[in-house]
Image (cartoon, rainbow, N blue to C red; front, side, top):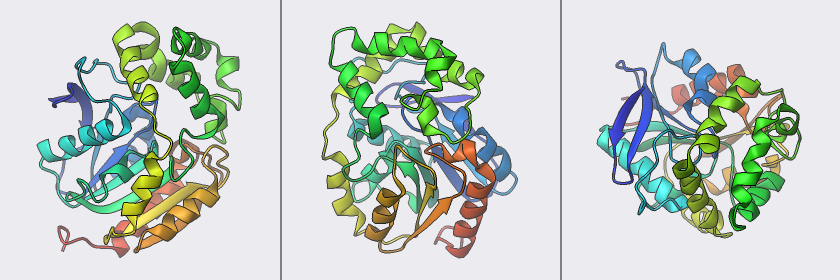
Length: 282
């Protein structure tokens, strides 16, 4: 992996390189870039695929103690990352967290196309029982540490109220260990996640939705057809707000569409990019 120093701290990222159009894949809370591995393998032959590891739980390097790690602060980290790498006209693909929405109308000049796959949106924040439980635990002294211990037990991880409720297929426990090792072993990483959770404001994505109506570039909303944490009805409403938005459902997929059905997601991404050339690609 490569690394880059930003205002908030040093973050890791992968970059396949090449001269193809740039696709930036953004993970959600408690995941790292490996959640996108199958999509990277599928797309890297035709696109330059860039995957940053944002400081929301599975990062290996703690951020600076004074870093803003609210949802808006993490969005600012993403915007600075795109700027520092000199990326333009990117196809920005978001999953689980709603981070990319917070750039629209604020720092979206580097986005050529926007793709939102099952993610926090509108009033669904914190999302589902998983999000609400995490938010509540972060506000109780020692609560976040105790909750995280459940990820040491495969049976508890598979429960619908945990990661098991985010995917239609069983998630390999080796991936879970990878994602949660930093939180389970580093106090400073838990501190970063706690800062994010405690800064939650219920209307964050309702306010962001007001700016989506002015986003004049191509947008795709690709939702997991079997998503329980992020209901498809939310995705359809989200697509309706985007002037050039199109809604599709990924069959056999929950929130983690890139794990459940990467082939269908990649096919939709290829179709979307091909049908919507940006100025940078012309």
